[in-house]
Image (cartoon, rainbow, N blue to C red; front, side, top):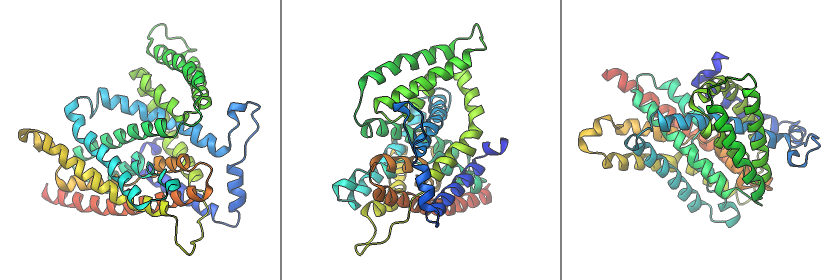
Length: 380
């Protein structure tokens, strides 16, 4: 399991899973495999009547968001974002890195039905971005990884907000209100030090699953429950849980989601060409992120007093972060599913846009990282 704590391994496994999913969907057995993913296992419980694909996106991915929220809380309290000044540069860069790709997407995509996909290119994939940096960034100063991690964590926080605000349909307030005291009880129980009862772990698991089920029933995307639980989890036990879950998240949960989400049939190119949403995502991910993150980082640098700018990233280092920030992948795939729920054609087009745009960003980011890292090694 130690192998899957490696950022390099996580990125490679994620890429392999996406490639396999796309290949399977377009194989002679593609329809049967997609049908299996969309099948509804019998549970006997109405609220849990989900397809296998939704169990993966709503259930397994909630565990990923739990781990991401634990990391976010650590960064906000003891890490790279524990003071307003530390958080300024990545916060401005992350915000610009969300706004600019959304604008680029809306410039390309004019059709109202497809314009709903504007959140798709706003996300940065932590596992992929850090994996490429770990693979090719030997010799770069530690501040580059710290900045990229902080930016990706803040990017995830913004993505979580977008999911909660824009992708909540048919809201049922009662289940959501019932989930609040359960989440609060989860936080209170996790913070208790004595007595260390052996049943505490089981009680926490029960509270966590019950909270998830209530959020699911409320109409809010169920991954929000993972976020809430991660943010209220007491730091010490949360750190142990994150350490324990990290191999499963990197080696199983994210690859399984990538496999499932990338199972799309490549649409036939019509006389008018591919859907605008494909081109919107394809351009907005590598180009919008590059422009937005670079502009945001340089703007934040200008806000810092001259005497403190030595610690800020230099332009080549900013370009490393900005190019790697264009790898959307996991969260972008989820955004595509949520934005175009009910339209298989648009989901397929957005998924292909995410895969192609992220691939371009990986190549561009990989080359940029390798060149800047080589110069850093030669000058040291």
